[in-house]
Length: 135
Picture 1 (cartoon, rainbow, N blue to C red):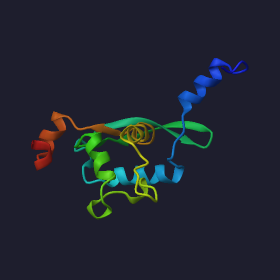
Picture 2: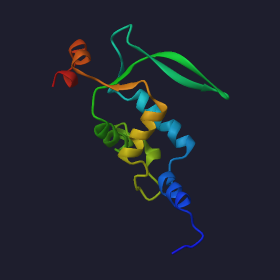
Picture 3: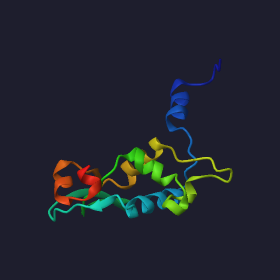
């Protein structure tokens, strides 16, 4: 046992953790998610959210349109780690081919960097009418 170690220091190391996701990879993931075929803009014109954006050292609230995810996040992750020819993102695998972005990491990135992304519910699915939404 460590006599000089404090509980708070040990807990902070455990909570903070470590990540293989660099800032550049994070930006690539955000762009990939926004351009995915199952991420669509809300069909309702007034359907907007007030999102806090950081501009330098200050935060301002900006009104943005909702983005809707027609598929579960798990399926979005499976699509992301798939083959590049099938629309996957090559940067989420290391040199040995091992996946470095987990499902929960993708969820955290979406929550922090794309707060306007929401799950599509029955109201939006009825308005859309595409094959994915109807089934």
